[in-house]
Image (cartoon, rainbow, N blue to C red; front, side, top):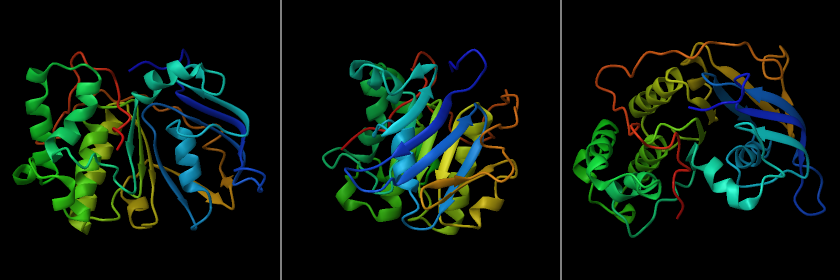
Length: 265
């Protein structure tokens, strides 16, 4: 994974966002994200969580301020270079955004195919990932035949299959049972230990206690709460070199780009 010289991958400086002429939905956001950090993004409905996530995965440009991402100014970067940055980001959308005419297997394989991975190198990691999220018997099913929880698991498998530099997840456990929610959280943790920066937006306060070294990003009416200064001046933690826990799929890594934008419908 490639970061800037000092290790930061994301830096927001005095960022604001407004839609049209309405008041700002995000105001004065300043923080830095480093490799190996795990963040929970919380806040009441309407606080601006989805808008902040859209800025993080480059679906939206801010109205003001500066965003530096993977060493590049994301605001002034030419549009033809944005896809290269987006491929380094895995996204789990709240509404799944699976491609309706593709099977579960082909939805998960899509980021690897877009990245040019040879077909012979796709089958095993995709099958392993779907097996691990409990969908080994649903690989050929199309999204319309899957339950909400099953679609969520396909979306998560697609987002993490290429081991992205950053994973952004919008309510990723909202449609699964508690046991599967913990299992998926463990997958995010494992990617985090390999150096992936993870940002999970959630309303589930119980999840916040499941990752001991996570940092909490709280949005209140478009402003970020940072009482300890850990977001603006985060603690530097070395990236762990350990592998995935036993039985957990590795996803695709050899020869593949570092991340994926998770595919688009």
